Length: 73
Image (cartoon, rainbow, N blue to C red; front, side, top):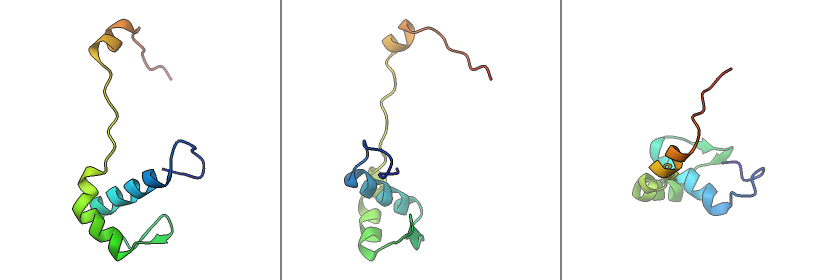
């Protein structure tokens, strides 16, 4: 996330993002031009797997009522 250009993102979103990335890539030394701290690494080990934000899938009612869209370049 780029909290500088998106008003919907806040400091907590950025912390979750860093934690999740460090969970997936534990040997990173820098992330977004900032040095990774020992505290961030420890938190990523404990909580990183739970930091991924998942969007809800559309319900079958939403899909059934909408027209089919086909991609055409």
